[in-house]
Length: 120
Length: 107
Image (cartoon, rainbow over all chains, first blue to last red):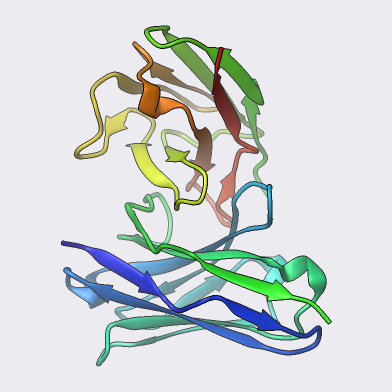
């Protein structure tokens, strides 16, 4: 069965970086892409970026460009999201979600979420 | 960016009720509208994709309709497990955007 298993919760200081992993199983990793979506406490969902596991093509929301990097490792079927220069308003649950295509598609499987807390 | 506006933001209903949630896009998105259900402490779950296609395993009491700018999610007969927050999402153009959510609560 399809599973996306994310890394554990992290606590970071302002200005630091965080790298969240998303281990995929149960499907052909390179036939899909991975989106990253975050949810601040008590708030709605915010799309951050997409990465193709086939060719590494990325598309970042303008809000995060220059501060976020998405990568994949096809040998371990794992996607990564690194967010730099963390601020207190980056405190959120970060989800990875599978999609067949970059656009005009849908997120059919999600990871369990990784809570990132930014606090001094 | 395409703005997605859901209404209502919260909704009180009873088991057995028929419920409709609407989602309006700030410009035409054709049929590229998805609906998700999220329960507290859990990841979102895909219910409906491409406006009206039911995701595998989702009960048939859930249905979606619409195209262009106006969309609806209908639950034909509410069950206890349906009380949750529902989000619409456009996948027509980047950045993909979500509605603010509709919290469905027990009356």
